[in-house]
Length: 397
Image (tube, rainbow, N blue to C red; front, side):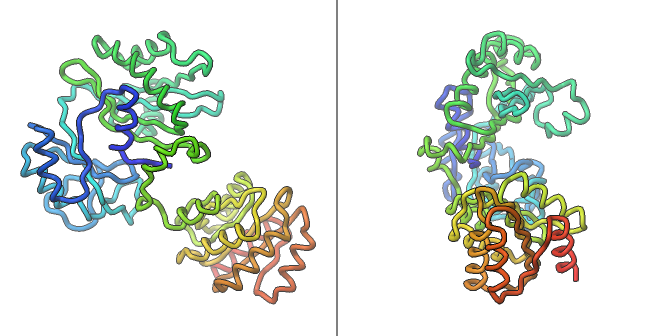
């Protein structure tokens, strides 16, 4: 689960991280009060959407003097004018895609005199099975570009979960970031704060880009992106309350109600698969034969008929879907359950696009019989390769 920048900063502030004063607003009428309360003389007006690249983004609708989704203001009047322009407009960034996202809230924040911009993040490094820091002196840039062009400027430092962040670990981070006092001592303390926040709140990603050194030598969290492990949210009702469903795809929201792993994509072939690895392989082979998947959907190993029915309805609700591929390898997941769910869903919502089904494993003959006797227009496939070719051919005519 993702949260907004201002929410992430509020979470980090509770742990002791240095963040600027700021106020979230939902209408332009609130902008003057927020700016006056913060005091100035410099304010930053930030679009709050679940996407990166806001500062370099542009609004879809014509906006006079479009300065992107993150703007500096040097008067209360300028704060108000920016708020009026930005709220309700659609911001397009590298991460939103061409459709963009509507800006429904802004974060008015006190400005800062920036001397240096640094990069810092925490993530789960699955190569070593530990939480790791990733730091670089090249803050404010896309870390992917830094990794490709100047990998020597990035340090990845896994943390021993039993020891936690030691002074030696934190010192190594501070040295890599080339920090002098007082920023160095503050960085040593901040590393421990961020690790505690990451582990105690079951985060999956904590990214600060940039972490700044101000002209007075102190450090500050200037931006913050935080994601949480969905499987651990039951432990954190306070975090669940921060969820903003307006930032999520409606189909993904519906899928979460049935505990389905669903991610909407831009292709035309809907996929229903059991198992994340098999789902990835299914998407890959669709691309191999010249088409694009419309979604990632893993129904899991113990899906019920109702769960499969819900999954099928979610796929067919996507107007971009021109064909559907069901690929089930029955282990824990029984093929007859999948077949029953598919038949029930088709009878409920109808089927207006080609459907190819590949079943293999537990109760496979029973599953095939259910489909064959359903009277529905379903194309059977012998294996994954056969299934992919058939659905791509059907979609491409």
